Length: 614
Ligand SMILES: Cc1cc2nc3c(=O)[nH]c(=O)nc-3n(C[C@H](O)[C@H](O)[C@H](O)COP(=O)(O)O)c2cc1C
Ligand code: SF4
Image (cartoon, rainbow, N blue to C red; front, side, top):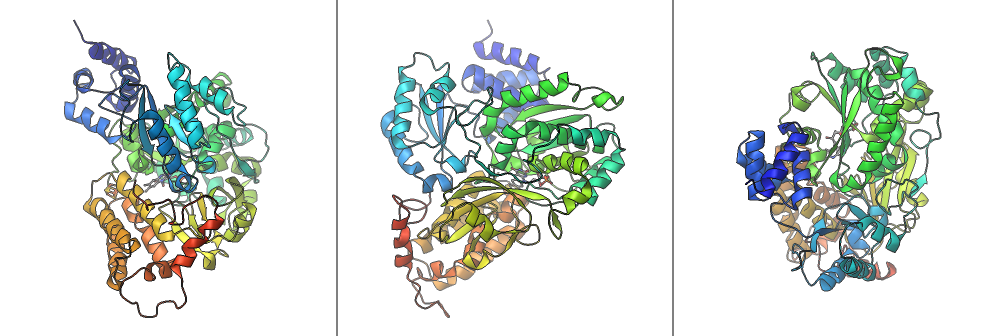
């Protein structure tokens, strides 16, 4: 007699046509059916898919949302990103531990709950937040967290977790039936490009009246650059992809949005999904792709039913599928690829690995994805926001788009603003807007520092507030975390390093080991045991990690140290046991940290009491 695992695995593999490149989807289905992907399931998967057992197990162990051991029926993942800690995630965590009678990383004896931390679930504007399975619970306090747990305990079955959570929390401002959450959009400022009112599909209609080469020319004339962080010119990327000889090409939309503090793509996916799919369709037409993938981070699984519905509606309207818009020969469709909790999968080559059913390991470049990407075929990977700019460029004209913004940075930028300010949320501003103007818009009072671009970006102080947010000055994929007076830049930098240590894929030594050494030395300084020479050590080691790492994660991971050394050096020097030449006179660290009293109810040590360990 076949075991339950064998039967389930056989049925699931069958439903995916035994396609091993769909391994991630297969594993997510197996886990959803069996509760975990244990030894028997791994054996059965290896046999069904004809792959070595070790490869299957290697994929399972890579993703934090996959598990080889049974977890509780409700997995609570409390976000422990910096903004969440600033707003009391540690107190929520203690409340949950007490109520459940377990620590983080454990499962209750009745098998009902598992308690874990998550790096960033894309909810920094409504922190502290947690995932209860795939349901997002924003704005959690310790009391509410405990109440939720006891409510769930009272339910005989955890069938409708969502209904229970919505009853407790309301449905946010969410007007969309299929969005399984109580998340608010917090769209604070709509600009002219992404969130403007417009005629649906006007960009697609214009594009289909042009040749693909003309569409690419429009995008180049608009000088559109990628919104995912690197700012690569989109038209050029598409030209390379189109020029690569192949029968099949692919377009991948990067909706991994894993950079801590970023949540603007979440708002686009909820409020402008049609604009995004329209942009993907135009991109497919331009590069000559008939297949697109929307890589949706696992933390946003609550949006997948809603997005599937959008795709189905567009198929029914002839806007996806064959002969789109009545144009024979232009076929294009989109598949949603769900991620499974790995920050590195936002990096485009790791993203492609993940879409291919592999561990999310970055690939060597060259060849670049435009030459050899998904399944070895030419592939353009673009961010959600980038693709949303495209229909607007076609609809309104490249000149219209290029006239917004400044210099080499055209168009608008979505900013995800969180931290110590009164109006957290998403702001669409013209590129070239000064940081000070954004700080005023979001109600940041006397900010000490702003983390621009997430942990891989830079921490800037008041001397930089007059700088412009654009590709030529302060670049950002979208995250702005505001730190008020009394926050400790070093404690924050240490927590960001902990994030990189956790998320490193471990492939290369400078990143795997270098970040650990950086954090150890930084923590030594934080504890008041550092010496003047440690500052040189930090600078030199940071430079090595940046230059010797294989992918963008390692190449940017020392930025928290480098940018705080540059902008907040007195916070280092005041803690050293040996004097530093030219040390800033009159800098009183204790007084600076004591100002935390103004940030009601929070700890003076920076991010949280006790520093920055996970
Ligand atoms: C560690 C790491 C994480 C990344 N995460 C994302 C992400 O979540 N979303 C994204 O669009 N780009 C991310 N990127 C950048 C992508 O590699 C790629 O440049 C981008 O998706 C290209 O799209 P664009 O040209 O439209 O910006 C990440 C890069 C690195 C190194
Ligand atoms: S730099 Fe880090 S994340 Fe990138 S390949 Fe090396 S170990 Fe992996």
